[in-house]
Every structure is written in C-alpha cells, then in structure tokens.
Amino acid sequence: MTIPAEHIEALRALADPKSIVPEDAAGTHLEEWRGRWPGESPLILAPSATEELSRLMAEAYRRGVPMVPQGGHTGLVGGGSAKGEVIISTKRMRQVRDVSAEGFTMTLEAGITLQEAQELARKDDRLFPLSIGAEGTANIGGVLSTNAGGVHVLRYGNARDLVLGIEAVLPDGRIWKGLNQLRKNNTGYDLKHLFIGGEGTIGIITAAVLKTYPRPKEHVTAMLALPSPEHAVKLLSLAQARSGGQLGSFEVMNDGMLELVLHQFPDLPRPLETKSGTYVLMEFSSGQEGTLRETAEGILETAFEEELVIDGTVASSEAQAEALWTIRHNASEAMKKDPSPCVKADVSVPIAAIPEFLAKADAKVLEMEPGARIISFGHMGDGNIHYDILGPAEGPHDKWKARMAEFEHKVHDIVVELGGSISAEHGIGQLKRDELVTRKDPVEMDLMRTIKRSLDPKGLMNPGKLLNP
Ligand SMILES: Cc1cc2nc3c(=O)[nH]c(=O)nc-3n(C[C@H](O)[C@H](O)[C@H](O)COP(=O)(O)OP(=O)(O)OC[C@H]3O[C@@H](n4cnc5c(N)ncnc54)[C@H](O)[C@@H]3O)c2cc1C
Image (cartoon, rainbow, N blue to C red):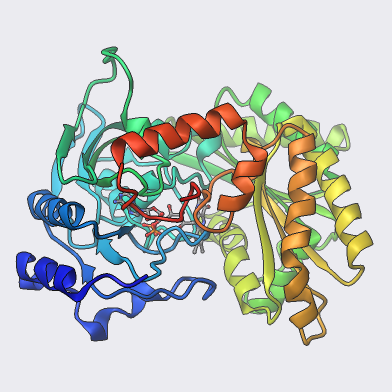
C-alpha cells in the first residue's frame, strides 16, 4: 500500500511537531512482539489530546488515508501492525481525568498503561482487577479494544465488564463523548461495546471510565498437582461452591508448560516434587482479614480426601505466592525463547468440555506429528485454554513452519465441535481473520460488516484486521 506523498505531508503539517514520531523512535511501533508481522508505515502520529487526534483523523478521512491505531503494541494477533498505513499511537494521551474512590471509578486516557491504572487504584485502597502478562506495556486503549481477559476474569469479568463509559474518535474525526459514570443507564443501544473488542476497526478509544473494586486484604495462593484435567474441573467446581465467591483465579497448566518454563528460567524453583500431567495454580482473595486461609485449607483438605489432588503447596508468604505466579506469567516468554515457531491457539470451550477438548486435541496433534510439544495452559475458570504447539525439539523447523496453519485448523475444528470459540481473549487481528468467516454464524458476520460499513464507509480504520476488506 502506498499513500500519496501529498497526503502524508498534509498530515505532517497539521500535527503538532511533538506528535510526529521520529524515525529513530519508530522501532517499537514497527516491531511486533513475536516478530511475526513486521510493520511498515510512512508516518507515525502520537497526538497528546483528543481534539488533536480528531483534527488529524478528519483530515485523513477527507483524503482517504488508511490508519492503524496502536496502544502498547503487545497484541498477539497482528492487529496493531501496519502494512503501509499511517500509525496512530495513543501513547501520549496520558491524562488521569478523574479518580473517584467513593464512586469506585477512574477516568483515564487511552495511553496510560494497565499497570499504571492498577497502581492508581491501589493509591486509594482500590483494585483495578484486569491483569495480564503484558500489563507493563499494554495501554488502556489497547486492552479495551481487544477486550483483554487475563487472570482475574473468573471473579471480575474481562475488560468489557470493567468499563462504564468511553470517549472515542470516529473515522471521520467526530468525537463521541460517552464518558458515562452511571451504573444504570438504560437509554438504548450500549454503543461502547462496539468499540470494546472492536480492534480499532471503527474508531479510536481515547479515554474510558473504569470500575474499581474494594482492595482484597488477604490472598491464599496454592499450586497443586492433579491426576487429570477431569479432576481439575471437579476441583474448580468444589472451590467455587465452597469459597463464597472468594476464588479469584484458577489457572491450569500441563507438564509441557511447567517443564518448559523451568528449563528456560533455571533460577525458578520447582514448585512441587510430585510430577504430573496437570497442575493448577489457584488464588483465593478476601476483603476481610482472618478467615480466608481457613476456608481455602478446608477446600484443599476435601480435595485431598476426594483424591482430586495428588500433591500441593500453599504459599506462606507474599514472596512465595509471587514465585508461583512467576511460573505462570513466564509461559509466553518461555515459548518465545524456544527456537521452534509456535502454533498459538487461544480458545475457549464450555468449562465441563475442557478435558474432552484437551484429550481430543492432544491425540490429534500427536497423531499428526509425534514429536510435537504441546504446551497447554490457561484460565480454566473461564473455559479459556492457550493451546500452544511447539515443533519437534530438533530443528531445522522449516517443515514444521509450513504445517503450522494445518495444526491450528485441526485444533479449531475440535473447539467448534465442542461449542467453543476460536478466540477467547486475544482477538482476531490478521491471524484469525480468514478463519473467522468460516467459523462464525453468517448472519452475525453480516451484522458486523453492516456496522463496520456504516461507521467506516471508506474502510480506513485498521484495514485487513478482524473483518475481510
Ligand atoms: C507476554 C504477553 C502476555 C499476554 N497475556 C495476555 C492475557 O493474559 N490476556 C489477554 O487478553 N491478552 C494478553 N496478551 C495480549 C495483549 O497484551 C493484549 O491483547 C492487550 O490488550 C493489547 O494491548 P496493547 O495496548 O498492547 O494493544 P495493541 O497491541 O497496540 O493493539 C491491539 C489492537 O487494538 C487496537 N487498538 C489499540 N489501541 C486502540 C485504541 N486506543 N482505540 C482503538 N483501537 C486500538 C489495535 O489496532 C489492535 O488491533 C499478552 C501479550 C503478551 C505479549
């Protein structure tokens, strides 16, 4: 794609000079986390205010210039990578517009990182519960546009559930001032949900009203070895039924994941002596001090009695809990360090169907390639499994690379057969765009295209992502 030079010059002339990202700082905007979709752009703009963004987008719209919105550029489906479009980064939109401890809300601009949002909430003894491995870099605009999930969805929901209102600039430059702070507002279509998870295809989110929660005072974190994924489903059900809503996270991982992380990060201590095919990392949290450990230990005692669990450790300090979480958080990094390219299937199925999914997918993958290394882990409490496949340990990996799409397709077949989704939390981007068409209800696809056309009739917002052009 080549944009005529006169259009680029017009946008340059309109922008505040500080909003033009110089060539020597373009790196992070063009390099994608896994190096899969190298970017290319004639101009990277990073306006610091909604009004400036609005002026720039109105001009781009008038001239027919395609745009790719970008937050922290940590997305895993190629949604923020440009192929010659103008990149619009929200990284300089960083104002804290309002924090209301009493109202349990924060109104933040899009370029504030997720970690900064969590810290802002903490200052007022509040919790902003969204938490993902990339939180130090991912931006509020990006996490909302991908409807990010993470490790606390079980209790607090995903990004979509944590938003009361948004402000967004439409493709033609109009500003939608939708910073609603109300918990109840039944006045027709709830349009913010088109932008949340919209992957930048119908406009750019510039600010949002986020919900905060009472900050938990106590945590109990445990790592457990289980005989099988079936036992993990039973344990999840037991913990939910008995904990009175205090189960915050329930993460599952196979032995492939644990061993890979321990291999790639040799300084991490092995959490359990007993080896098994299935491990669970679970965390309870409570706003009241005193009774949580008793509740959690009671649940674990029952789990041992019912032989749901073979071995386990309960963290006795924050540092120990942190060490257990580090294993989980290093999963993606461990795979990145492996020389083999990785099939990354971020899928969801009904929780009760997880064991069947894992059994069928493992059997299929190993039938297709006995040397494949299956790294399955994820947010079991949300029915979300990251089903990743590394090629045989011995390279070269050219043959493996050529077959990766075939493996992903087969895994998705099993997901769909079990009533699941081919994207649980990472979104569609470029990676799953073509497959989405074959998996989603045709009427739903048609509705999505209708919405896209009515808001972005020239097709300028993030072309080639999410929907086919
Ligand atoms: C190590 C690691 C761990 C991760 N763990 C998780 C996890 O547990 N759960 C999870 O859900 N994701 C996870 N991710 C994926 C990624 O971090 C999320 O998708 C995140 O929400 C992306 O935020 P970002 O600011 O980096 O967005 P970007 O990557 O910059 O953009 C993502 C998409 O949103 C669009 N976009 C960005 N900003 C805006 C805006 N202001 N308005 C409109 N559109 C916009 C882009 O065009 C693109 O399509 C992980 C990634 C990494 C690298």
